[in-house]
Length: 195
Image (cartoon, rainbow, N blue to C red; front, side, top):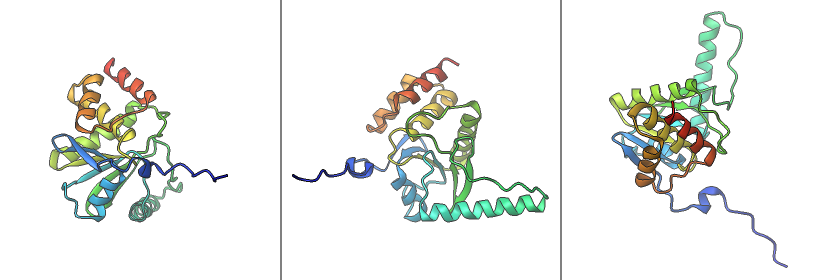
């Protein structure tokens, strides 16, 4: 009897996923490889801002997060604040830091659609994306660039660029054919269009 082979890792299961696609001028959706290329590689797209919707922690990201937390703790101590910041993957807890000259915002979403796309979270995303687009190029990424990052950019297109949810998802799927937010995020995107 042959032993069952474990399922492949997601990146192995989808080996032909391109790392990133430009959705509108200066706004890219991609995977963790695109973020790595921008921060540790040649940065061929000239990305100036990265919104990490997955909380991907590579050694370089971990080092940048550690520096940012140390700076935050030092600032709090200087202001005699005694509560140290908690490291959290809750979507309400975002972390911003610089990584090799690229401003980065980590605002992880649950991959199964269980994160509420709250007004506060959307404002955080949209302000960051608008700031990046004003003077550079923005990459929104998650691990595969299929679900979470697509959800963030679709919400941005609906709330900030006047798209309907259907138009936003249609454009994303046209420009990035692998785009496929889970049904829970699709439903939340539809509700954004009704606001």
